[in-house]
Figure 1 (cartoon, each protein chain N blue to C red):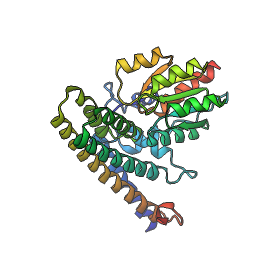
Figure 2 (cartoon, rainbow over the protein chains, first blue to last red):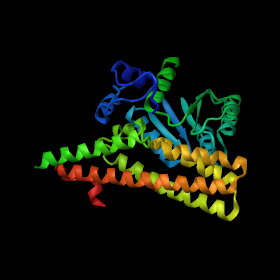
Figure 3 (tube, chains in turn blue, brown):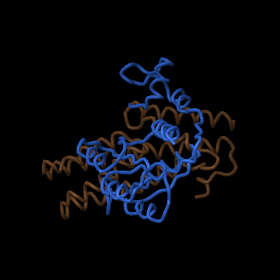
Figure 4 (cartoon, each protein chain N blue to C red):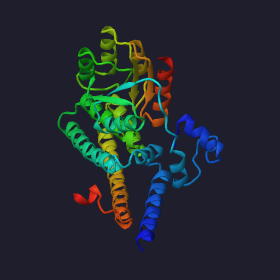
Length: 164
Length: 156
């Protein structure tokens, strides 16, 4: 079972997670650990979720609402490009790699070509080096394996918040 | 007693989730879904799980059709990528892992192997669906036992 760095450290501290990340404990204890204290951000962050999968979009939008961060969703790369072309501004774009019409690297190349300076983070459920390289070479900033957990999302938003 | 019934059902629910954790079927991402359920989204887990079922079954039907009718591995890859993505969001590890194996199988051009992998994927998916249905039913009973007058689930 994989945990984010924050959860892992906390659980190791609590003596519930062995060094090889094997979870020891029961569900009620796990539920308590996952109540991460509320985060707030200094700047008005705006996030665009680009993914053709409805479940991913629903979960990520709910996470953003929970963190009180404004979010918008696009069903594919073309829709994402259309938002930027219409003058919308986002601080972070979380983008799936394999999508119809315009995939992650193609969308990234296009957005950078338009002069978009938002942080572009790729997501994929199956990480290959080739895919990662293609995305980063196109102008992407970082690459995460799905699921993008709340812990990872908070860390990413905090880093952007501090940079701004 | 009303309160005692709700407590017992909560214990049943936690036991079921623990079982699915230990089987490696679910992990902490599922707990994160429950964390996202609150007064403003009282049905969030039910909505996400139901959406996952609907989308997954559509994808599985499409995969079967693609394999038997035209063996379009590229389109299969797109569907499998979606299945992997949605499974990872609620985290159903077995389904995600099997989807990954099936995603890479066409590269060795083994049609029989693809069919076998698809059957394993379908089997794992339907096992998961049964368990999650069980979870949702216990949750619904727990809410009734706790004496909630209005619950959106009951209106359906």
